[in-house]
Length: 192
Image (tube, rainbow, N blue to C red; front, side, top):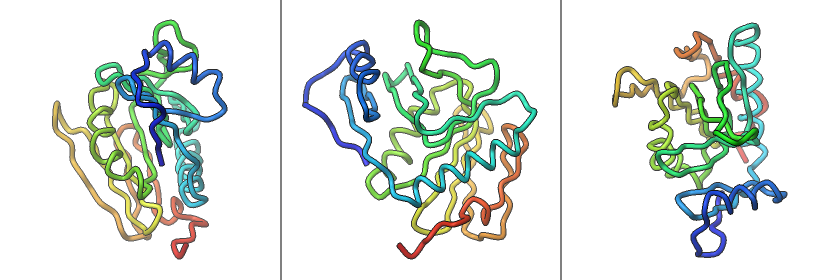
């Protein structure tokens, strides 16, 4: 869930200064600072499950896996954000002058919340698609078994596959990894 701070326009420098000193994470959207509220237990566990599955699948390969505390810069949309899960091919590229802001993800995933699902499907995904190194996107529903898997097939073309069956194994193309849907949803209480 996100919440806008004051209705004033901030520079990226002001945002970064405030963000480094803050105890809570905030997103920066073209001058607006949006505070990120805490997630549900299902939201957090789904993100951890996915990161753990990716960590195992990519062990020994040339990738780094990050959780929701790693900031991403999307310059074409003047957006600083924190994807729930992000994979970056080595070498890690950081925003010029920063040691804490990644710019070269190849894979990102968001766990859907009622308050952010439209943003994650729309404006945020549109912003992510401006990143040249970005090729694969997962949207994971925390309220039912449902995963949307987007893969870049050509310039300006993305293929969508949807999974509702927990017995399916999802094949990630960017780094040839397999994720079992049942493993992704391990310990998730869908009755909450």
